[in-house]
Length: 340
Image 1: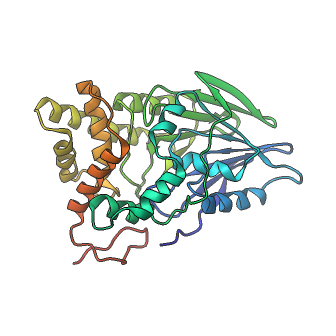
Image 2 (image 1 turned 90 degrees about the horizontal axis):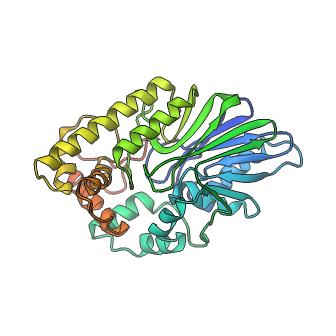
Image 3 (image 1 turned 45 degrees about the vertical axis):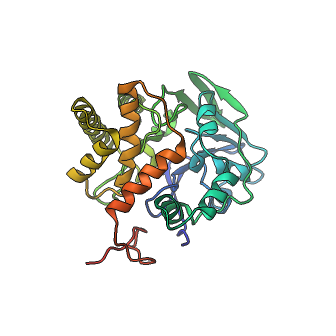
């Protein structure tokens, strides 16, 4: 399966957003901020092919002699970080805490080998091939931040001020948001997975939490006063869209706490919330396994399991939800087609 080209458009003065044309794992939004002397990326695509496309589109919008010399990474998931390899001379900025998540995930080449070598007859092998098989990290070296900070960081891209705000553990252990006051815009990273009536998105997935921290992070996004919110995935939002997302997170939090109090195991709790079907328009409902599992760990005080253990549970639930998929047939947004 190939990925259709992303759309790159202007959303404010000297600010461009690169939006993948469909939803799904690994298809993250990215930003470009330009000036007559320098330019910066906010997040990167997942693999060299997509990153190369983003770079080609970026160069069309740069002044003569200007290159992208800085990459601000909202968090250390590979779909926001690994594409920085196409800019080997750029400064890569992340929080110090992001290193924890870099160590949690496989390296790019380990992940490539895992996806290509997994048994497609197993739930995990099927799921990895289905959702990650279109990416190619066979020659991707690990990307390491070159400037790490804690708290907040003030930068400039030409005359544009850039306010980078580190967050407590939320989507991952090392999230940040990027506020561009001149553009009245903020890049939220994956503390927000956006969805609108016109452009439905996917269920949020949160590896660290607790969910209250994610909700508070959304509040920090609103506290900037920004009118344009670029989420980690999904369509660009206004302030009302962020408020709707907060209400969705609060509902998942309430259900997780209620089911935990009732003694329901985390995996079964995720199955129950999925079965309630509160947001049937959202894709990847199996990701509730991750988010609810993370919330349970905070309620239990238990340790974080390995990422393959988590993804095996995700794959098992996805297989339960789609027991009779028709191989090779997909909807326009890339979802498998089920029999009538």
